Image (cartoon, rainbow, N blue to C red; front, side, top):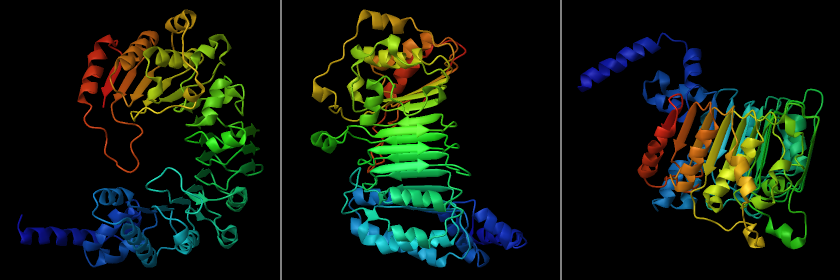
Length: 473
């Protein structure tokens, strides 16, 4: 296509858009990402400044590009950090619309950038932001050290107007119970609260009542938290708790290995996720008897016992609790649980106790095997014939869908695949995904081609009934 033809097309496009009011164009731009909206400034003189009125999500996430530049050695980390700060500041100075839906900052920043971060928070509050996310986590470690992490000044809360805020997500932002209670009291519309990696959060007591709106609560990698109480949060529907590791400092000090939790008057709570760490171990070891809310409320359960090889010989199947209303179950495994009998029995225990289960998701961490906390105690896993026979004879009548994430196609995978399709007479769909569900944070590269694993999954298709669909990814 010649230069003249391209110019004719641009002129024709301008003729069409010139008849559209600015308000409509701004509404269209606000449905695009911020970067996509900014690119429209080259279309014509009229479009040059329209992106500055973008009132959707100001998403400052350039981490993927930055990680690759750093990995290739094409840019120094401090140079990349400075470039990121300049980019955010340039956009904020240019922005002209009185409100925004979302503000999201995502880069490795800390105490050295406190004044800059606080100016961004002030900007978002002045724009009547609805969803605020600050992810300042480290590129190089899972948890930031106390001397590096950004500490949110408690007096800042009194300076902000966050009455329209519905979602607050803070990662590597140090806050305490006083901060959290302050946010909950000053944000009457807050529905989602997520706190990750806050070393000063040692105790948290959330008391609802009246028009309390909180629906989703997440506490992740707050390793010093030892006491959590939630009461009167009658709208709370989901709860996520993850430690990512066993707190060895507590072990040395003789402190309790798990966080004390108690939930009261939370009638809508039905979806929970307990991630890696001591609390998952605690729940399994006590057969869920110390679950902080009635087990009958559970409809969705995600459990990641990565740091333990469950001593199933200690689990009496007859005493395992009944998840009478559970419809969705997600279990994640590390490489410790590679034995096919271990996997089958572990999954079978839950399925046998979940008569209404509709969907099962199994996630496998394909990283290098790690020694679990239980291995250090010298415990071993042995199975009696009675236990194996109980699981072998199980039928999962309500199970409709199964997903294998991180499928390797090993004998253990095939054994469990076969067990599930034989025991679930009404199975409608099986998804086998060979991609790693726990990709490396610094490098976004996936493990090389898993075509062999995919082929092994396709080989199992002959075992499926004609009514069951197989999806291989």
